[in-house]
Amino acid sequence: MEWKERGREIFVIILAIVLLAVSISFRDTTIMYAAFLSFAVIILANIIAKKITAYLLEADVKIKFWSWYQYGLKKGSHFKKPLPMAWLPLLLSLISQGLIWWMAILEFDVKPRTERVSRRHGLYRFTEMTGGHLALIATVGIITNLVLGVIGYVAGFELFAKLSIFYAAWSLVPISNLDGTKILFGSRGLWFTMFVILAVFLGWGLSII
View 1 (cartoon, rainbow, N blue to C red):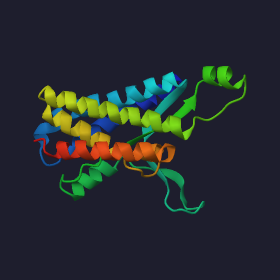
View 2: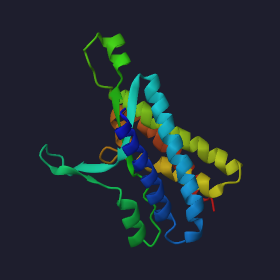
View 3: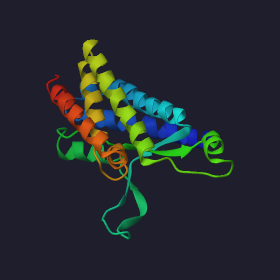
């Protein structure tokens, strides 16, 4: 990944952290600083877990803002250009007066590294990652957030635990090109398994503070 792309990715990550922290602090601005620190750990841990998993699969992960492109089932039912959805958490928080916390704000692309292509498929014969690979990468990110949620709760950081679990739950939503879509199309069995697990964690998360 070139330095320009890395810089753009870092900017997207920082802006995502700020947007989510502001959106969930709409009703109580006193938690904004704690929310910012929480999302910094939550999002970075999620991304690092994905990048490590992709690295083990000999691929690179690129993080970007979720964009909406297809609005219908027909092939031509799409916008001319992808519509960035980074504003959605703030809009929903404003409309609901802080009652709705939308956290699905980032998506990722995967590109096989040259080492993978050369060694496994012969020089100059490039291949795309499979849906199963994408599902695995996305799932590892969700599991990482669930584990962090438990650790945070045990350590006494209840807001962090709640936000980590909620972020994991939103990551399973199968809309557009979000993580949940990658998991569902990569492995329906895995998606439903994670749905059951997240339902349990979400019920617990709702009882925290």
